[in-house]
Length: 591
Ligand code: HEM
Ligand code: SF4
Image (tube, rainbow, N blue to C red; front, side, top):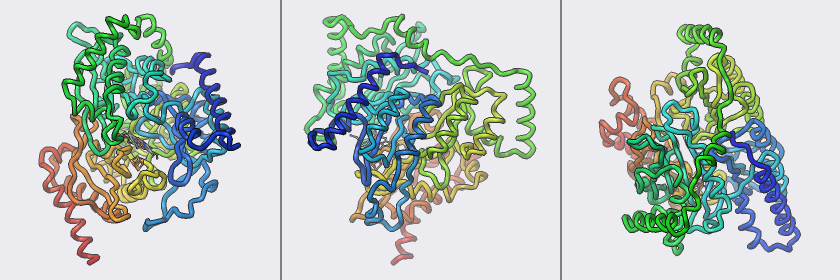
């Protein structure tokens, strides 16, 4: 893991001190609300439906066990629902809202959010975070946000090069970059170093892919202008190959062109995707002109030297771990035997939750945070503490937040898999559903979010409840189900094989269903937005719609064919008819 320097540590603590001073002046009435608001936002403090919401930056998703323990403490001691007035929680809704508290929420952008911390206690939380080098800087506002990557970075078997040193160099470049503090809109960069895109790079403002050219040199393919929202657009490749050492100079050119020409007059048209779409080649030309100027006139100031890359890479050297081969062989033989005989659950866990590793003695193991009774991506204080224990015992003290809102242990010895499984199962974190229907992505939706049209969490619960039978879940195979409570698309519904979007009709909750979206993984294929199946559905209809879609898949698939494969081969018509039949049926029943 990257270790913060003394400079970084001091900077984060000074920022926490500065925030405490701002908070105290606001509380004393000497700092007006209007002036405090941008200051709290710059530290990740939003105010949502019932309470403040804190977003904590987790650079490229990496968390130490010490950081997990502090996140647990914050959840336990500060994330309290009873500190807030939720008396209007049921307004306009048919059911009692979900509103979980005392937990942290893993986000698709590998960050962590809290939903219930009172502002009065926010400075104490910033101190706690600073004690483990964490903060909320640039997790809000129109700046370059936390840079995300593949959760398997540095360990994936299909990796061309480790993206983390580059993500770290970009983090240092983009943090408090004076020119890019007030961009037209938020700016999100994702980077992958693997052949399979597990970082949804095409859906980001800038998507970077490390690759080697025909001469074997390392460089980046650069995509620009991806994003979701009301206009889902897949980023376009504007550079097939950029030498790795030029990435900051080139990014500087891209962001500068956006900063100058992005639409500041209309918030709905302010993301870079709109500029890239409207200007096409003219935007690319502008970037190239700017890049040439940076190289020639400015003397390429951000060129990364070999020495700097090596210095940063040295922080990401893998822990020296090896299996006791003899015992590993014996144990693995035993495992396979047990799995074949009666331990179906363990066998499933090995298949779904355990991924191969660059080091043949090791495996990457995903702890599932998707289960009935818990919001997708939520981790309770106890779970965070227990996860920290597992991380210390089985993963060299390191975990990673995944895009799919789970926690991955990157350094697990093969011979410790049975023990890890037993422990994780005892703690309720070993559900073998990674990649399956119930490993869904969901935003906080109307239970928490001020911008929501509808709730996400009760739908997630309904689907988790209906598909809890593991035989059925495994029979359905790999399916990406993504839920957003409004068109801002935080739950990436556009890229779900099945997408659910909350829409507002006459102040009631309704949901639009999309089919065939993809986030660019090998299973899903090229990134593409899903297509709407028809008019929206009532909340009570949605679980039946999902069931109708899955039944259609089961009736149509060929041997071994996935949901997305069947949908693409057979076309959407049968799926649409099945979904729309649910609405007609309910309408008749209630008429
Ligand atoms: C409840 C607090 C939240 C609020 C108020 C919020 C607000 C927003 C807004 C307004 C946008 C659209 C920006 C634009 O297109 O100009 C957005 C985008 C996004 N949010 Fe959130 N968000 C919240 C929580 C989350 C969570 C929990 C996640 C992850 C699970 C998330 C992930 C994202 C992502 C990935 C995008 C980019 C979508 C795109 O590509 O356009 N957000 N958010
Ligand atoms: S998609 Fe909408 S409802 Fe969900 S978190 Fe984002 S802004 Fe809120």
